[in-house]
Image (cartoon, rainbow, N blue to C red):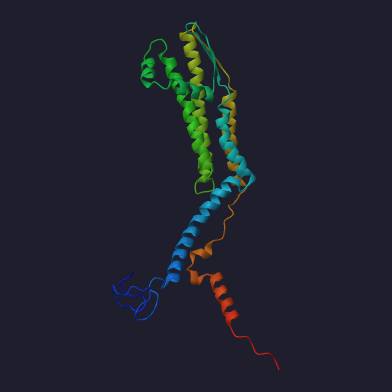
Length: 273
């Protein structure tokens, strides 16, 4: 129980166990509760008024316009394109000579199976026979993994495309993705050439540019759609919550409601004689 009555400031004692103030009779617990609830609601509505524009931008970035939907789909497709074969590798081992297709699935399966032994990789770089080829192998391997992670990050930022600096991000990120894809694919080509030359009887490989071409076209398509959205000047459709930024008793809807209630409570005019 409060130490003082919130209305008359009467000091409450231990014997004042009832919820009503013994002096003025007001309920100490519920006195002013409407004002407190209204103040809490004002804070919640004020925060909502600041949050709503962000929600509107995210929603519009996802499904606000057909071009936004196309851009979102294009943002995910490079990951599927990485599943296309970059080529094949053929290496001869005791009792086996497997031919492996190189793509995102085979790379992830290899890492999940064998793991990444960084110590072994660094030692292989120093080999006079296969050192150069293993450096290219490392560039290609990590290039594909970095491209995968970067594509996921780019896809995430497409969700906030309509935020400030969204246009700059959506044009720069695909260019970075194209650079990473080029580094990974060139690393793979150089690895095949280097290891085939160093181990002609033990290693050979083929190169399929389809995966690289599709990835580059998808990133280019992202840039094209982003520029098209900018050129068409497509604007976010915001929900009007400006009224919530005003105090409750200053809002037009509140004033209109109070006037309407006052009109309803006014005594009816006497009928004409």
